[in-house]
Length: 472
Image (cartoon, rainbow, N blue to C red):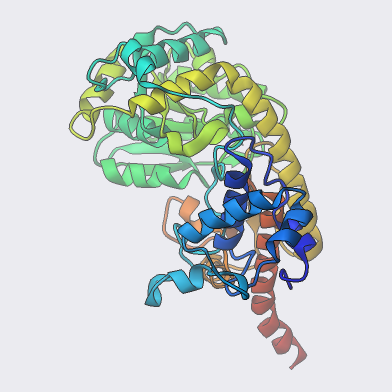
């Protein structure tokens, strides 16, 4: 790929760079270039087109290009010499020695298709927080362990809109849904206790259970969610708590049907179970959020609802919450205080400002994610037909079954090819093998296309020895 002589190709790699609508045009261009460089789409050592040609290819002024490149020079991502042009100084030159570890997920250079969160906040509407708002928001010192009153009231009202009577005293604002789930489990289970969880599942749930010393008892599921008979057996076996995702399931993308929700609620009520209902992904169901939810259906079971702004909004806000009976909220407060004194006040004000637009943001995300998953599935069907993938019914990930016993070696190999995906073993209760990988497609389309191409290149290395053995 000769980007120096082909500014049109560079423009294709940067497709959508103006879509965010935030920041000045040079800032947005610099961000698009930075992402392409860090992911390796624009390789180290490539000479960029002359500024005049680049401006023409991107349909912007030359001053926009000049300012964007100045920002990248400040970050050390490009270097320029008079008469020699502008050259990319990619991750391979900026990491020292063995710091570029093959197969790592967090922070390693390459295309990240492992982290299942929005890549940036560019899809959000503009929100501002100034000192005047902080002063007028009843937060005093800023240390409000249960959360700012304005956000707790807004979250309670959001639950009320679905018919679930909620008082602000039932809301505990946390640093993301992960903390909300961890605090709730700490309040409900202890060392040696059995906790019922679906398998595969959100990998963080197993870290949480290890942290409280609880033991997972796995639930069986199908495309409609957890099977009621499996939940009944787990509760009869002594499970003291249940963790259920009732939006699109991470990582499978399955979505419980309304009929299945009714059946699960009946089982939970029959056992007067303690249920943690994770609705973090509920707003990203492609056909719209499934109603009613367990918290609305259950009459005798105790249901704690956990949610987050991370998937519809942005994980960088670090704002989640739990909705629970007031005594449980009080218990989670006392469990939290030894660890931290509350979520960031400015982030909470930003979250409160986003709440009125959250349904519109979610509707847009549903459409874009469904288009992204459909495009990725079409590409994989052509390039990797031996992989088995059931189309998800929501969310941003594909759960792909590879024709191997253990995907971990392939995940490491893919990392060496510059693309990072999550191994299926991370989503399992044990530490054994899994043939699955999780692929997040919530990225700019050119980045996803290039990432899937790198997966194909890695898979070709896996297939080559097999082909040779068959021929011999």
